[in-house]
Structures are given as C-alpha cells and as structure tokens.
Length: 446
Image 1 (cartoon, rainbow, N blue to C red):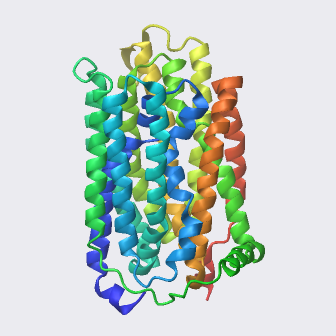
Image 2: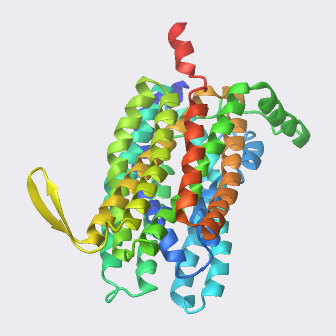
Image 3: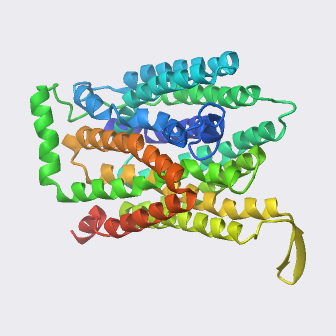
C-alpha cells in the first residue's frame, strides 16, 4: 500500500464502513431473497421471470465489468467513475419507484419498465463495481480487509438493515394503511434515499493514484491477456468452477419465500419476518466470517459458507416433508425444556422456514467477504482489474441463467425437486472449494 494511502487509512476505513452502513441499509430493501420476489408476484405470473427479476440489479452490477476493466486501467484516479455511475443508477431506481405508483394498474407495462429501468440501474452500477473494489484494494491493506468488510456488513446489512427491515415489516403488516402499491413505493423509496446518501459518503474517500496505471492497450491485446489468464492460471480456473457450482444456489434462493406463501400458506407479514431474520443472522455471521478471513484465510470462508449454502435447500426439503406430513396443520402443543407451549401451524411454519433464511443469510455474508477478498489476495497487482472484471462479468452471466433455470425447473417439477437439485450441486461446490490454493499459507511458510 502506498505512503499516501497509509496516511489516510483511518479516514478511508471509517468512510468506507460508513458507506457500507448507509448504502446497505437501503440495498437490503431490494433483497432478492424476500422483498423483490414478493413484489414481483404482483407483476409477473412466471416464476422464471420472478427469479431473473429478483437478481436483475445484481446481474447488471456484474455484467459490464470486464469492459470496465479494459477502460479504467488508463485512469490514475477512478473515484469520479464511481460517483457518476452511482448517480446514474439512483436516477433509474428513482424513476422506477415513481412508475410503481403511477402504473400499478398495468402489470404488463410495469413489468416492461421494471426490466428496462432496473436493468439500466444495474448496468450503471456495473460501471462502479470494479472501480470500488480497486479503490478498496489500494486504500485498505490485505490484513484489514476482512475486518473492513465485516464492519460494513455488520453495520449495513446488520444493524442498519434491521431498522429498515422493521420499517418494511411494519408496512407489510398493515395493508389496510399501506395498500399496494403504496407499500412498495414507501419501501423502495427508503432504499433509494439510503443508497444515494451512501454514494455521497464514499465520494469523500481520499483515493491514491494507481502506481501500476497503464495506458489503454489495443482491444485485441486485452482479449489475449484475458485468455492468457484463463489458460495459465489453473487455480483461477478452479475458482471459476467453484463459483459456477456455488452460484447454483440461485436455483432456489428467490423461490424460498414463494414456497412459504404457496405451499405453506404464509402471508406477506411473514416476508417481513424473514427479512429481519436474515439481517440479524448477517450481523452475527459477518463477525465470524471476518475473523476467519483475517486469521485463517478466505479459502476457509468460501468452503464454510458453501456448506451453509448447501444446508439451506436441505432444510427447505425438511420443511416440505413436514408440511406433507401435516406438521403445520392446526395448533400444536410442544414440550420445550419441560414447558408445554401451544403454537399455531402458521407460527410453526414461519419458525421452520426461518431456519432456511438463517442459512441463506449466513452463506451470503460469507460470500461477500470470502470471494472478493480471495481474488484480491490471489490476483497479481498488475492484472488486478482484469481478474476482478472477468470474475464479476462471469458472475453476471450466471445470474442471468441460473435463477431462470431454477424457476423453470420448479414450474415443471415442483419445489421439492428444485431444492433437491440445488442441494446436490452445492454439495459439489463444497468439494471443489477445498482444492483452492490458500495464498496465506505460502506467505506463512516463507
């Protein structure tokens, strides 16, 4: 890390964490796990469209980044790209919030505008994703990034997101006061305000010049460099295979909440409950993942979070089996540590599905810490933008395909088969993750 970056480390660390707290408080209200799929049920009938739509923002974030990697290497300072790209993103999101209010009576028109406006918002975000990671790599040392990301997730997707999720639950629990579309206009409006404020905060970071900045090379040469990375780096190819298998959790994630509503008969109020369960889990999991990242390395984070990801469809299959056995029909009396407690079937179903969302949230927090930090640890500094851009574009392609495949699979075969296929593929992702190289072991041995 440069001398200039070291001088501003405390300032940049604090601003980066504050950005995460405020920005993620808003982005959590655009959750692909709970709120977005529930909203999209009002717009689309196709589960495949709901699944793709739930991941639309994340998809757009990832797709353009290999192109961005080609262009940004010529800039010594990249923060202006982050600022303008995010302001464009927020303009599109704000426009869509207005469309929900004015066009809610026309689901087809609203559906088209959803894909157009949020697709453009995602692509605008894609111009800043690589830039953000590159700025972090140049302002936060490797042995502090685990804590940096953990604080961001703890404060943003944890503490602040709990507050925003309580607002969302309150709104969804009172349809008589906040009928559709006012409920989602309010929820997504809060998201827009928080994300815009987070952008302003990160704009105050002191970015050092890139010491390995290069002039923009011929596009053909850049493409040859990408192919060279893929051909010569066996560990990176193994990493991409693991990402492919792990991303297959997208077969099921957008559909857990739909399963809870369709198969278990739970209402929108349960969606707010699952949202809160998820963010509370993130608070606790982020601390644990951050410590593992800093002490043991990011390969361990990838492996353990993949185990949690595989456990989620296993738990969902258990809930489906219990539902078929009538475990959630009517009131039940439970013996808890010698005390007899009576609970309604809907309460038991909510608790059972809550375990699924705990596992999804824990795995997601591990992904956010483990995967980007692993690439920062293993990518050569001179080619860091290429590695980051290639990886995130690859992730974007997976986010286009896999949720749609999962939706079609569930429509044809049902929830249980979809969850079973997800479980088998994620089990394979665990096995592949154990074969990844851990760079910190080499450093410790030297």
